[in-house]
Image (cartoon, rainbow, N blue to C red; front, top):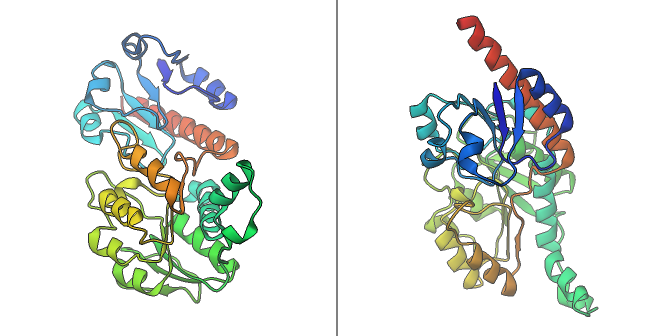
Length: 313
């Protein structure tokens, strides 16, 4: 079996060793992508490539697409289904994912960075300044925090915020676990109207409408917004217009719409120059620990899928 690693940089050595038991592991060296993909039955990807019909056409033997992610915005799920290619990912693996804390920790870091204006303070000192009065910030203690999506990440972020002394409200479309004292609200608009810090932790399914559209974004005046979920959860045009108009107290995002290919990254960069805006390049889950553990988990899940397929045959 031919197994390809499309983004092999620092792929966990133990995971590679386990893959070598299954088949021949080939890392992509940046050369002829067609020659790399053509013989593969299994392909491991991260987030740097859009896996669409055009790319899949170069991999006629592909049977399994492995992605150590919960989101699938980088995958053309319809094209994969048409080809009968099985997706092996972290979606739905709640028990395992509860042990992965990278994204909740990063989310909390962005909240604190916004409140304390860390980005501007760092740049100020790097450029020769030393004026603390330019960067008087706010504390998380005593703030009202609204969580959109109280799943694995949302629950942990809510717990962190509560530990800092913030009050927590949330919205979710399903039955979720919540701690005593957290308030469940009936709509995103109500959440924004009653909380100053809004954190997007909801899951996203390809084709879903944004959760924050123009009416919700209009309510965000003087609010802080943090998004470590998916850029597609937000009407990005409306949000960027609100930022340019100075309507929000601060925005931190680890994600943007259409991260691979034509997107609004240039506008985001421009917005960050004159406003309290923090951009990070989708690093929420990118810690050495989290990536090694998720890669090994996906390898185990692939092995189980292959064993099940052999039993059927």
